Length: 543
Image 1 (cartoon, rainbow, N blue to C red):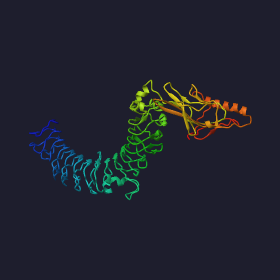
Image 2 (image 1 turned 45 degrees about the vertical axis):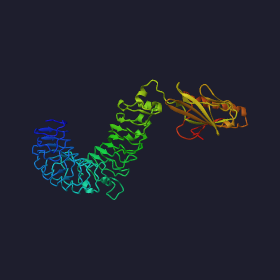
Image 3 (image 1 turned 180 degrees about the horizontal axis):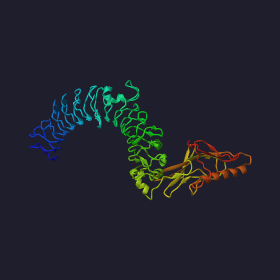
Image 4 (image 1 turned 135 degrees about the vertical axis):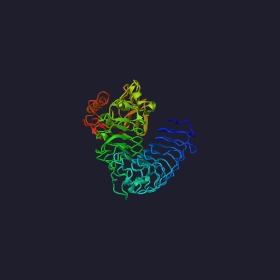
């Protein structure tokens, strides 16, 4: 019988195999007794069990969100067939020691979010088949050492306990040891258990007691920092370490030599994922790193992950994809890149085009012209403009001589939409082509800067800027002008001019038989002869 959500306040007669009166207003004034095999009376105004026929035929009793405040002794003495008892979100403040006598077959008992401060010792020992107990959100101050001894030890069933969000004043290690054979354990935000899972304390060694059967372990919101002990769990399938103030991957406490499992490290403060962040023996099916502060993710860190299917990087601070992604071997992994402040430049667009369709829900954060735009839309747009690209290193140094005619190139791959200009800094003086350059300095049609007659006072920094709606690129050249040597001045002047011309030609995009960039920082000297110009590549020319 189903009369759910009808505003009913009183039932005259109700007897059926399955009764659903959820979301009504039935309370203590009801004159009828509810009778059936399964009674669903959630979200009503029941204050006790007087309106429920507790009989041997009762199999499931679901009374979540009522106003029941007490469970007297022998309440369920006749409920020999009851399997499921749900009493979440009531007003329970008192459970008497013999309240659960008769519940020999109950497998799930749920008492979440009541007002229980105290539990009588051994109160659950009468429930012989109990396999899952939920106590989260109660204001319990104390749990006796033997409270769970012999409980939740059912063989062949899925056993577990939820002790999350309980403000215990103190606990004993014996409480956990009585639970070591369960398969589900939640200690979320129950800080009294924290001391058993951090290193360098007087409590136990630097490894936790082994939980040989544990499958799901919720250890979130305990502020473990970077102090957690190694967790010994060979059969783990889910480990939740979210919201624990980790600033790096806690590889020292993650289980080793375990089968692959799902790891949740969301809502921490991790900034960098490097190639050595994970141990080779730590294998994952799903890895959740969402809502950290990750600014750099090296995909080489996943090179040993042979089982990984899902990676969640949502809500971090990643602006571009590590170049290692292009050679990432696990292309079948589903990756969530949403809600990162993506820099939509050409590098990102090119990498984006390699992503599977289900990983393409990304939006630009910068440059401002594209903020909020779907990266997929930009990648598909014919008019997308990439930030101007250099075809040389961004810094060069050139040694020239007084009287040389020097052409300084702007080695940028220009597009029709780019705007290019020069700025010049000579000691304390600054110029740009929007103002007046020093005498003898001009801009050529192909954007190169021409110095018709080099003088010593032209030593300085020459910067070519190129910008469009996608961003800005600059190339800076440090020009050093020296006096010529007197011997064979004419021959050496011609040779110097020829070298500068060759250097200029090789910095034009699309040319470049000589590679100027090199593979390491430092200074590369091109010595051609006494008095010749010298190119110094790799120096940072900023004053």
